[in-house]
Amino acid sequence: MKEQAHFWRHPAVPGTDLLRARYVTHRFSRHVHDGYAIGLIVTGVEEFAYKGVTHRAAAGELVLVNPDAVHTGQAGAPDGWSYRMLYPSIDALAGIAAELGAPRGTPHFPEQVVRDDEVAALLGRAHLAAERGDALAASTLSRTLFARLLARHATPRPALVLPGESRGAVREAVDLLHESLVDPPTLDDLAGAVGARPFALLRAFKAATGLPPHAYLTSLRVRRARHLLDAGMRPAQVAAEVGFTDQAHLTRHFRRIVGVPPAAYQRAAGTYKTGDSPNA
Image (cartoon, rainbow, N blue to C red; front, side, top):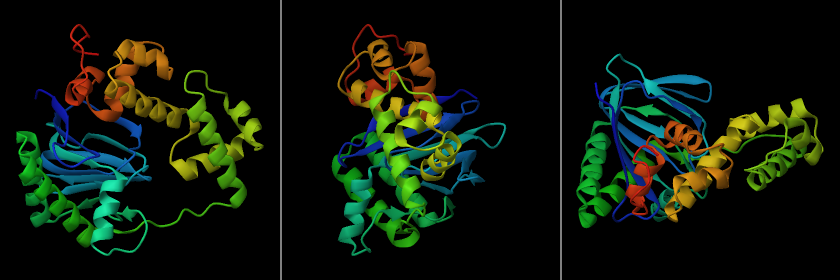
């Protein structure tokens, strides 16, 4: 019943992170990824909300999450679940799609849980090769995996339909939140700054991003925290830099979104400093 999580960088495919984990009580809060989240359920059942629909993925099934798509994650069975995940960047998959002659645009996975035994076996081999540090095998198998996924399960990304005025207000609001991680505005102030009414902005913001502004801000803070941790900054300092009240506040939200605490993330990046709290 013990929970475990190992996070690391792909040894040979740039812009790709990996996670091997077993969770029982851990719950991922509503969050988004810059890139894709592609995984294989090894044992148990994972349950996750995605765009208003609750999905259940059982052993042997693939989980396909698109960039900037809000989702959660928790156990769907008493014994939890274990899985192997890859997190390729948009550029990584778009480049492979272009090589395959796919239509222009960001690849999109319309189904979030699929059963494809051949691709599942390929994902398992690619992930294991990356964990062993076998760069040639890992790069070959991973690129073959991504190509197979794109060919079998991807379509061009559908366009988001929002009125032009709303799109502009949301874009400005997002830019303001990027600039205000430490001292964010209230919803009323944010709406006033972009020339919108608070409730209208809230509805348009959720339609465009999948999250209300306060939850989107937390996601931005964790995203920025990852960059600072990659640069070698200590977690306590990172917490202050991105607007969390303290290191514990950072750790709580970081683990709920990334799946591992900041110190474990830094060890994977090779920027962990001796003396940092192991549970940071």
